Amino acid sequence: MRTPPVLLIAIALIGLTSSILSYADQPENSWRKPPILPVLNPMFYDSEHFLEDISVISCELENGKNSLCFKLKVKSNPVPNGPYCPETINDIGGVYPYDGATNPGLRVLKRDLFEDMEHDGYDIVDDNGNIRFVMLRPGEQPNLDPDLSYCIEVEPDNTLQLTYIIPVFPRFASKPTPMDDAMDIVGLSLIGMPINGLPPSVANGIPGAPSGLGSMPALDACGGHINEGFYHSHIFPETINQIYADHQISEIRCEEVYQKGSGDLLGYAMDGFPIYTDLPVSGNHPQNLDSCGGHFGPTIHYPFGMYHYHASLDNELNVNIPLCLTGLMAKEQLIVEQSL
Image (cartoon, rainbow, N blue to C red; front, side, top):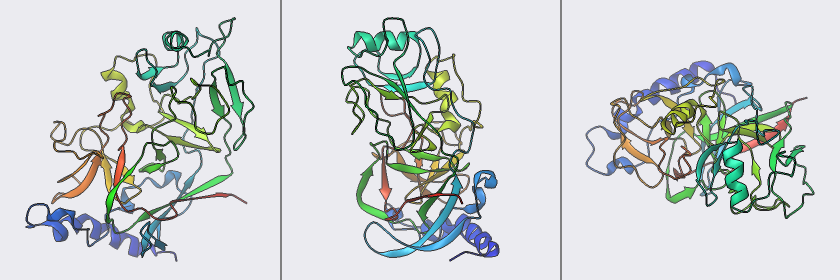
């Protein structure tokens, strides 16, 4: 069912006051009771990259119970992207969270990374100094030499339309859901960009890919890439330039996504809870974060308190996504369609 705009505005206004009715004057730890009113606020989303107005539909949650969910339909490639793989060892490409033995962390795709990879036993540079490279079509299974490593890109498919399903009324799950796989969907940023889980490990290889250890599906300067034809990020692009500054990375910057600061809302997780930047409005690092990088507390948008995540960097790869989600998600989280 489609939701009239007037009703969506009402939902948004109700969401702003939900923390008051749900949590005010509650005893300690009672905040883990589920919110009684909508949390996601459609008015916070930038409509530029959406294909239709956000609506409310019937949905089934992971626990089999029926509920209401927001339907958010977005473009497959919302912002200009790339570059990804450099042509030679003397060129500069994008970035990747390298988990090899030598100097692990978020690394620029340039000479010092590739030399470290060669030192770690990954044959990604040929005898002429060229980076071993492969361009794939969406869904294509490459036939690659398993003894070699490759920098991988995937062609875009701009005919795709993506529909994300997020619960209107978040409910805490019995246990957190890990976001440690590249196909896990963490959430949707306010510009309509999907945020996925940890990208494939360089050291352990890409699951299901017929290539050797050391291959990487390169990320661009905004921390995203194209897979299955559509762009998604594995690092919140709205704060990635701060990560570069903190780690003295000066060769690249994310120019296509507006950068956000302390206390800013980045988007909503697939369980319906909000995700904020690393620093609250106070400018101090958030305290008492759980294993998923979340906690209960006041924000600009939920002044009386709401459970929310922070895009923190509590991992050696400097990837600022929640490493798990505490809430229930829709059974069908993503619908991919081709435009007519």
